[in-house]
Length: 403
Image (cartoon, rainbow, N blue to C red; front, side):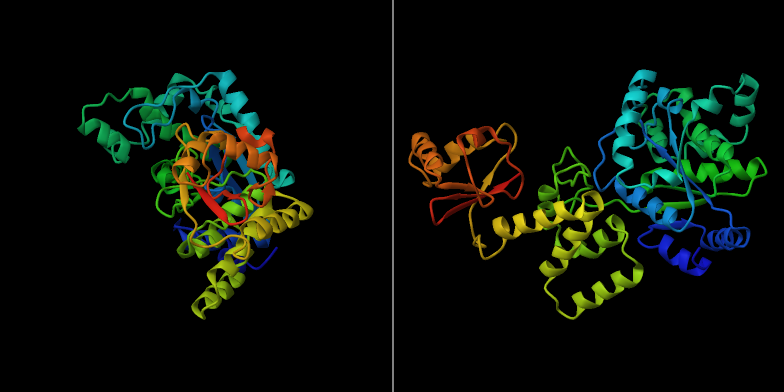
């Protein structure tokens, strides 16, 4: 194991808030003395199994701690999923059936083990212990907190103020999630800043039950490719962990320059020293595009093998390098029913790039239309367009797809 101080530096890289740092250092020192790994807890919401690199921010941090020798325990909330965590919602989330939870969990596993070390990961279902609590146990659990404390959670308070009904069972959700920490004797729990209340509740309950309190690590929310909104599949500003290497590489190159360091900190496993060097390069005037190119290589290599990354780089260099595509080309807005090549032909006609649909089809048959540097075939007419795709018509006409 690395020295505790060095471990602390790696663990805190990119962290929004640590509660608290002195306790974490003490745990790391004790871990090194006893040669005993820390238990890192992560609860997964079983309602949304599609993972993008915004979701993966927490998983990457856990992987860094696994590389330091610690153990991750993934909690699948099959029992709490029956209630549904209403975080950030104006009303309670629909509860899931056992079948839905299990199906979603399988999808999760396929994705999270693209990031986490299987050998240092334990998967548990919280029904193992929560389903065994007696009514007396539940009453004792409820007695460890107050209604006023529960109403400190923003979404509950907002619903209360606005007369939106709150089920009494919903008050139990943060307590049940906290009880997971007690059951595991968790040393560290991670989550996004939207999970602050629930994770701190775990610290409180451990203290009430005579346990050493877990460290609460909160990771920042990662902005998407638009540089403004939280990364979200519904907003189209996301990079999926299961996307092809070509698409992943291209999307990383779309990250705004002012987010390069944040992406290095939150979506890669690069050492803090490496990131300090990158900050220095940027301050000295190195072209952000060159640094972003390295970022695209690093992120893509986290999810794809070396050969696939090399092909993605070659593909990008051919299709999107400044030598191949002019800077000032016009855009076509796609999406909302205009997702495919066929759908944008009326726009091409309106912009005077082709005279008719038949002319466009004739160009395709003659090999005169390229999509991202590759000749289009008739079979590509129904191909779904991605944000940033470039169409070349003939020798000099270019159009960029914006979604």
